[in-house]
Image (cartoon, rainbow, N blue to C red; front, side, top):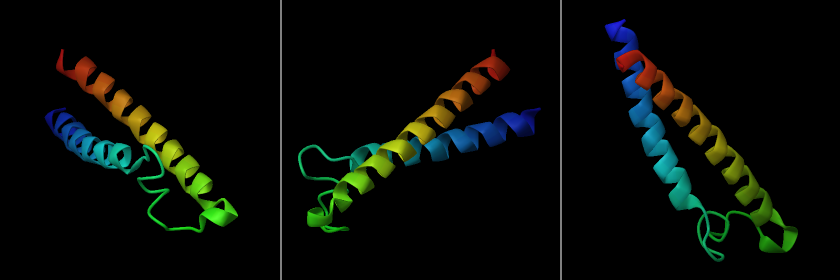
Length: 76
């Protein structure tokens, strides 16, 4: 059981770092990942990049939430 909690804590730290990174990559106003020039704006590529970034952020945030609830249940 202790090993399981330790692994969940390690996953929690990695998810936290990933979530912070993903949030910082979001654009405010034509900045962030979409405005960095990865895809030509004339082809609508920035919208696709931003949409996929938002989806990935939601998935990581959901996993982070579930991991937090799991740790709470195990440690209380």
